[in-house]
Image (spheres, rainbow, N blue to C red):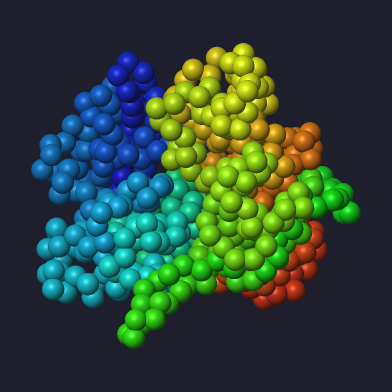
Length: 532
């Protein structure tokens, strides 16, 4: 069988820095190959080199060849590359919010892919867009005239998948395609990609840190570290009898231990009663304002030293609940902290509670100012909440926080773009910890991290929690990480709590059918993709 993609002795350099060193692999028609490895191993740049999407001429190929559908891609002219991109090779990027144009409606962005290739007229494009939306699981609630910011992270990712599939490419490169998706949608997307592969005989190059996804989709695996492929072979062989020490290390990091026990009768840090959040969504025919009820009457008792896992599908209200508890968005109900109802406090009076209530966001790159050094980022909260500190006292506290999250003093004067994803998340955690808060909302803090870095962050969060008796509200679609951290679980669906209780009990014997569906999707049995 003639391979659709043949990468031979490929090296990649940025300026004088060589980041990929003489890698070779192939992809047959209809085959799925996975590139796995830690952040910085060279996975994404290797994949981007196939459609020649690296920042040339700063990027270069000191050696090697890339044959795609019989055509040499290294050094190919602009016209050939334009002809190949979209129809022969397409790509799903990791972060849809930065890939989608915030000024254009999503329907227009997808239809442009169709019109450019003259597959449909503009008149018929909307019908085809709706077909693609149905294909990737976007229901009728998602309007084709919506803007990216109006969608959840999972919905935006599905729009990106629709765009990539619009021209029915022979090769689809998927860079962390399920990162922003909850477990049930992830399962659906995996099934979708399998079905499309079969229908179109489409090849898939998969880049992911989720080894469950690799098991399910990839027939072959290439393991990368330090710009080298150190092991490659059939999925079953790699998972069951790995040979290289790095591969063994990577697989071992997948299995996270259960969290240490928390005090069952620990005192309350916060008490949330009958919390409601609603958003205006337009007006009725007769001028009456309509609302979307995003959170519906949720009550939580938040105990010291506990981690509460907030789980559910995209759009279930998880993040909205976390933001409402911090009073970052308007809500109705009661939020009791230190015998005070935060809902009754003025903005000025609320300030004294702010240092006790912190948040770590999903995307550390987006939440860290690119113009500020690590020292400035971590120390910003101290300048606001502890203005009487001297400069030396502030610097001492910042240094303590940085070291506590496993970073080094020499990193203080560097900027966010100089760090890996895992390091940026550690900076975000240090920024929250420096104020010694009582409660931290963690909004998908490990979603974009590879498994070994996830394991490091889990260990870090456990240690810091033990040391300071912290409370975490841990919002995540990754139930494996939730199981490793959470003492209590809240399962949300359509803004409501459908099940809550001790984590051990819910993971072992869930009472709600929706909870069982989530767990079945997250903990799929070890099934290996069939070799092509």
